Image (cartoon, rainbow, N blue to C red; front, side, top):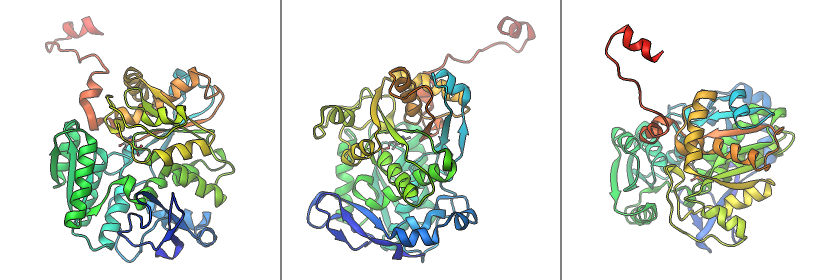
Length: 410
Ligand SMILES: *Cc1c(COP(=O)(O)O)cnc(C)c1O
C-alpha cells in the first residue's frame, strides 16, 4: 500500500486540492474554516479492494487500507482496532416499539473502549509519518484516553487537555497510559483552543478531529464495516449520537464509499441524536441557519459540546442521506442504558446509548417506521462512566450471611 490511492485533500469551502502532507491540516487559502476532505482514486480501489481480497485480510480496520490515507511503510499499532461485533437485539427492538430488526454495533469493544480508537489509530500513524515526538488533543474523555492508549502503543508522547468536567475513569485511563494530563479550568472550548496553540508552539501533532481530516478517515471505517457486515441486508437507518459531528459525517463517508464500490445495494438514512441539553447542531438544522454556539449540559459527557466544529459536515451528511436529527432527554438516556444492557446485553456509556434512546423517540414520533430495519452504534463502553450508570439503577442489597435474610429478598 501507500498514499498512491489518495488523489489529494480537497477544501470543503473553495474546492482547492492540496498534496496529502501529514501536517496539512486545513486549506492554505481558507484558513481554519477550510476543513479538508481526503479524496481517493476509486477505480483503483475497486480493482484492489475486492470482496475476495477483503475476505482474506485480518479482522481489524486496517483491512480497508486502500481507503485509508497512510503511507504504508511504517509498522501499524499492534492493538486490534475496529471490526467490532454487530448483534441482533430483538427484545430491545420490541421495547423500543420496532417490529423490524434492530442491530447494535458495539464499538465499546475497541482497545480503549470507544469508537474514538478508529481515529486515534490513524492519528498516531500520521504523527509518526510527520516525524513528530508528541501528539496532542483536547477532549472530554474518549478521544483523549484513546489517543493516550495508541500513543503508548507506538511509543509517542501524548499531551491531553481536558475540561474540568471530564469523568474520573476516563482521566485515570489517561494517566495509566502515561499521558501528560492538563486540566484546563473552564469548558471544553477553552481546552480546545489551548491545545491548538500548544501544537503550533511546540510542533506536536494535532489530533483534534475537526481540524485534522485524516482522523475522519479513521472514523469512516465504522461505516465501511457496517456495509461489509450487513451487505445486501444493509439497514434502513443507521443511528449515532452527535457531539462535534465528526463521527456521523465519517460514518456517512464510509457508507457512501462502500455503496460506490458495490458492497451495499442502497444507502441507509442517518439518524443523528443529540442530548436535549446540548443540541446546537439540531437547532441549526431545524432553523436552517448557521450554528450558534451555546451552553451545554447533559449526563452524556462525550456529546456535551456547546461549540461543535464539524456541524456543516454532520448536517450535510444527514441531509444527503434523507435522514434526521433529534434530541433526547437525560432521563431517556438513562433508560436506554438500562434497556440496552438488560435487553441487548451491551453496557454502553451515556453518549453510547443515546443512539438507542434516539431510536425509541424516533419510533414513537413516527419518524422511523415500526417496520424499518435499524442499526444503532453504541459508541462507548459503560465502564467509562460508572457514576452516571449508578444513578440509573437502585443500589445492591446488603444482607447478613444467612439464608433467612436472603429468603426475604428472593
Ligand atoms: C466522541 C463521541 C461521540 C460523538 O462523536 P462526535 O464526533 O463528537 O459527534 C459519541 N459517543 C461517544 C462515546 C464519543 O466518545
